[in-house]
Amino acid sequence: MGRFQGSATLGVALAGMVLASPALAADCPDNPDALGTSRTITVDPAALARIGDMQYRQAMPLGPKEVVLTFDDGPAPPMTNRVLEILQSECVKATFFLIGRNARAFPAIVQQIANDGHTVANHTQNHPFATMSPGRCIQEIENGYRSIAAALESTGKKPAPFFRFPGLKTTPALENYLRGRGISAMSTDFLADDWYRRITPDGILAKALARLEARGGSGMMLLHDVKPGTALILPQLLKELKERGYSIVHMMPAEGAATMIAEAPAATAASAEAPKARSAKRRQSVLAQHRRARIKKQETANLAEAKPTGRYWPRIIEKDSGGNP
Image (cartoon, rainbow, N blue to C red):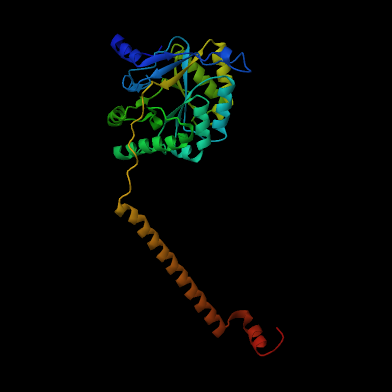
């Protein structure tokens, strides 16, 4: 089980969790041997503002051999599509922390994630943060939510009030911002290192299982649905989890929990005019370049006509005088 700090913390955590009816493997159509989803945990950000004992003092209150699957950085075809196919075939539910720009680029995949019953959460708009100011970081968080919400609009669903920091790099100020917006900061309990450039698919599988065992056999796992190696080993990973007696727990927001992100600020008259002014300036610059090019071309042509040079001079003279070239 995750490492809670004292019974008081555990009591607060459990107050933020509600156990829902399970989606058992026996209910999985066309696959009676599926791993399935054993139960669903709902998370109230008001009670669980920071989750994941890799960084925080609170972890999911999981029982022995219970695993929460999470995927970062998508959506990106064809890898995310393949991950969704595998999860669907095993009736396994997961949480996807999406990058906003990817959600804008591939809204159909975002809609599929939600329609398949997975939880859709935020991982910023562009996956930056390394050298950004707090204000820019907040803008990235908010724009990520707006992009994901726009992709989900046709489904009638909303992004969950869960946020994972890029690279798990956070600050107390940003965590306080999330708390004020009703959002849980979601870290993780362990990694599979599937983003490493030189790691092999077998290496991803080995690390995922070894680190899960090292934790005592339960926890939240962080994977990346955009990595080919992850998509490649996912069927074997789910098979190994089933054979070793593990079960999958799905994480969802509690009823009534909602992300409180302000609408994008309306452009002021001055800010609306600025792009127009820049566009007009660029247009004038391009026209000036074309004008200079035309003048230079004409000058070159005039010079060639007035003073033919080089080995073509005799031919030009002969042609102009009526001789055979």
